[in-house]
Image (tube, one colour):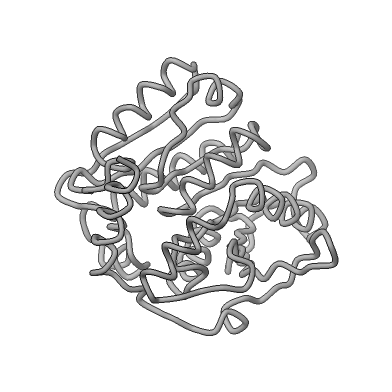
Length: 259
């Protein structure tokens, strides 16, 4: 079953490419100090119109292509919409690709523990940035590969952080979800063919969160498949259901950040 799931996932992504590809160093605008004298490349976005108060922090985790122009654009859009410091780190430690087999290899060879360590370093760096609130609220939003890593991070490392999973593989163990003290938002496509992120998976996620007593908002949008929100242009054009998913996720995060 796992092999079949990965084959379906791979075949689906054969028809997709990032809308923008660029050298990783050109996409990143900060270098975050990490363990073992490493640096994590990341794109950090502040709202173009500064908010009246201190900034919350939102981590945005890329899909299996690695950090891309579309993720950078989404990070800036989310920072502007939510009035937060939005940070999109390179979770692949120097790798990005538009070649599907390599993307699959990168996703499968990047363990949750390694991502957790990097995200913890990014949050330590965020705490030292100008304008960031003391004891700042944290949100973690991820797409596909990044969605699964987002819920993996919050259930194991930051249960007080709000989670937004865009068509990522959910955590379904009730005991793991029960550790969360912050809410979860899940966004999926009803036509997604992948067994771990399809309509049935979204329903299992919703049921597991309910059983765990976690506040949640999980929606499966009709008429679209996997990775249906591709770029900020869809939001600017108010395409459906992308604009609905945008409003769902930003309303969810704004409510959490406002306390």
